[in-house]
Image 1 (cartoon, helix red, strand yellow):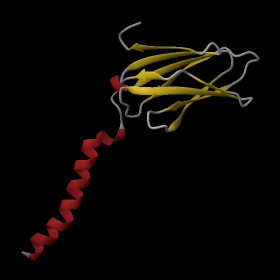
Image 2: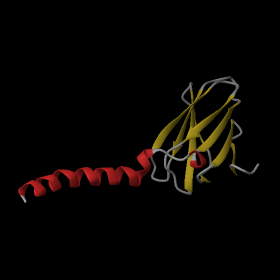
Image 3: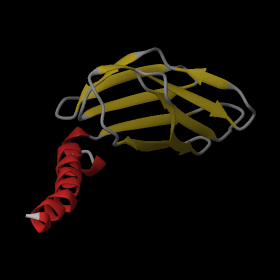
Image 4: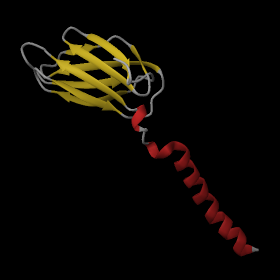
Length: 127
């Protein structure tokens, strides 16, 4: 009986850990839930941009950089909920620009054009 109790004492935490890992999906988001964010950098004088996203909880996360005079599609592949998000771009000169808050949802396509600060959100299937 002592052997069974010891086996249970070791096996139960391992089983709970495996169950928790399965429940969270291992932290990866399915491709159809990933959001693509295309940023057009038309600032003059030309400058690099660092783009961040502000989550509904206020967390600021770096998405990537956009070269001067070009555009780049960045990916947001963390677990997200249909809620308000905001984009922030900082130039190499230290200037900061924020998009208007927008509702983002799994599978969305976001287009943000700077310096006009126009932002559009589309469903992946729509245009």
